[in-house]
Length: 84
Image 1 (cartoon, rainbow, N blue to C red):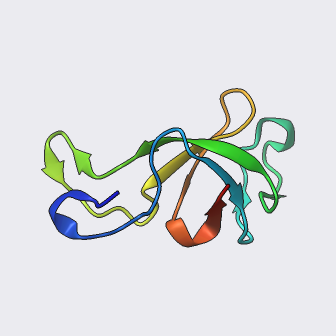
Image 2: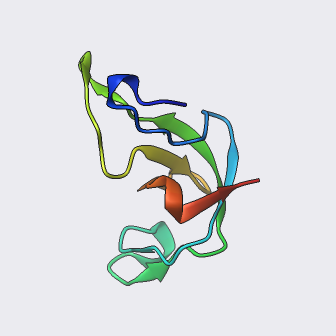
């Protein structure tokens, strides 16, 4: 998928299954709130690829939104995961 006129190729589509390959630490994981949690090896589904905001083309640093178990979602860059 190409991000509008920006020309950023993120290489995934909504619905793709992905696995986190880079060390990504988050502090908002439901089971580990307030503590560092590493996402390496977790598998999820792409639920959004952000390329615009209210009709304006943007180039976000972390354009891919991945949903894991339940409501847990993370914004990732394309180099932090592999498509399965």
